[in-house]
Amino acid sequence: METRGKQGVMDTSETRKQTRKAAEVIGYVLIGTGYLYCFVMLWVNVIHWWGAGAILAYIFSPFLALAIPVISWIIEGTFPILLFAGWGAMILGAVLVSFAGKVNEEETKKRSIKPILIGVLVVALVALGILAQHKITGLISEEPDAKLIEFREMKQTQLRQAQADTQNENKSWGERIEIFERSRYLVKVIKETFEYTKLKEYHEFKLAQLDELEIQLLKLRLDVDQGKDGALLDYNLLLTQRQFLQQDIKEMQQLLE
Image (cartoon, rainbow, N blue to C red):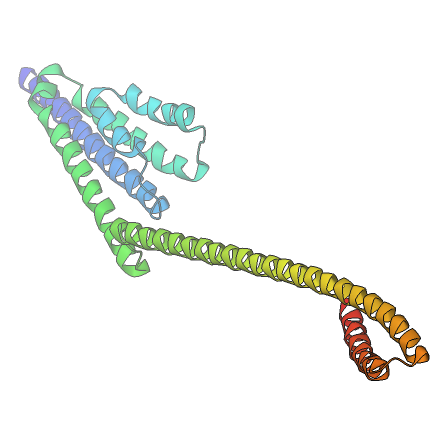
């Protein structure tokens, strides 16, 4: 009877150990499956901070693992429904592993290093996976690196600056040409005004000469009528001079008009 009792206790203890071992294995499988699901769901984007947090949370407490989605929801303001299955799998796995590891305190102390090492290993693998994913997608999409983008932006900035300088230089030359044209036009106007004034003064001078010539012609006409010697010759010369003078005055009048 005593032997059977001992055998029954041993069988029960062995069954519990196997149950705990199975729960631990299932927990790790759920954690890995949940994280893989989340990783696939977020393949294009950077993995969220809660990914590693949910895996490492079971080391300390399953309740911390349960709080991960809530914390993420509060901080990020979003709760992706598609990722809830991955969260649930990781949290359930964390609870199972925590339960299996804390059934008895001595066994927990002996195996306390195991979940830590596994958690660190999983995080390292995930980091390598993220790095590889970004490298692969970078090669496939042929996206330029930051230095190349910075170099292109610098060259574009220099090109825009050169174009702006050229436009300013062209504008400056245009203003210079416009000022030169205005100055030349002003000089032309001044010159024409000066010439017009001189011509007008000369025209008035010729008119005065014509008046004096008319007076001389009247006097010579009287001398011719009185029969003075040489008066007729002088009179004819003055008539010819008056004719040329009138012609000059007529041409100047046309220029003044």
